[in-house]
Image (spheres, helix red, strand yellow):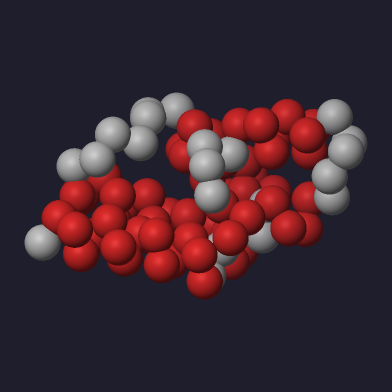
Length: 81
């Protein structure tokens, strides 16, 4: 079942929110430096896709890091609100 959760996480990122690959911290640094527009990296689609992919990855037991994905999710949520 773990492999199915990992596969689901990969598919969500690949097809729903490809901008959500990785931790998100380098992308946020680029956004804060003004090098990237907010639309792609802090959208509703990215928030939903990364949240689902993070939950699936955590449920599978693979180590994804604690800070990176949640920093990206919080920044996307703050940009939407």
